[in-house]
Length: 303
Image 1 (tube, rainbow, N blue to C red):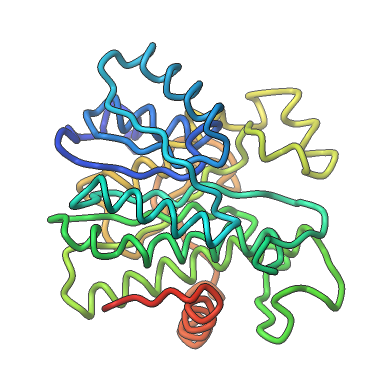
Image 2 (cartoon, rainbow, N blue to C red; image 1 turned 60 degrees about the horizontal axis):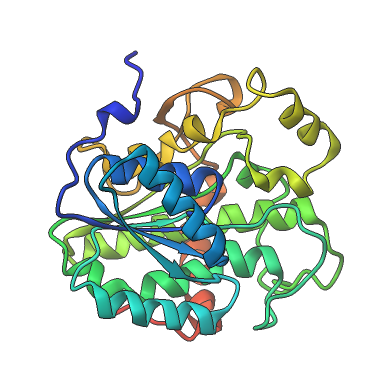
């Protein structure tokens, strides 16, 4: 089996990519390699100071990198709408949207719109962003939308439509798993709708395995210990980002596919096509979550 690396990314000159959460970790490494391959990259970040620092770091590594820092807080629908307006104002088309930003295992909290924080940030904010940028994605000859999920979509991740706010008992692990399952349900449903409409765009998903990023700061003790011990147990951010990059750029990747590390338990290693749970492919759940997500965000998809 050949090993897919960033060297396999094709020339992306003339293409525009938007990467959410691009100021650190997986998002920064994704933006770095897209820029290295010639793409114009929008670093869509909550903290613009950190975003500019990330852009400077990438430019030092990739002289001539075409980067722009865009303020975006995906936990805020107002911020999502503002960012989408600004992106649409700068770009007639967007070739690649990487929905990467997220939070993990956070204590109970809600977004300013009243959504449970992990679902609101990891899923609903990206649903809204994708819908608001849809016309620019459809203007590209072969756009891709990539949802960054997690192996955690397999862990206590049932979506209870009667308790999306988890008011009956908050469990941060279950809340995170549910948000990552939602990422997959959304990506698969989006790809189905794009295909049915004959649209020149596809949706895929990816996960980084267990990677050494800032997301581990709220993680249970064993995972934080693994982060301190380093690479033997975790992918580096650069390797973890490869699954996203493959889904985003591999000419052989197809809509509806899911990429992750090839190592044991999909925890570490270079990216291959992987399988997600039966629950992620449940058509009734996909359709219901789609409808609920559009209703909650107030964003519809013209497909």
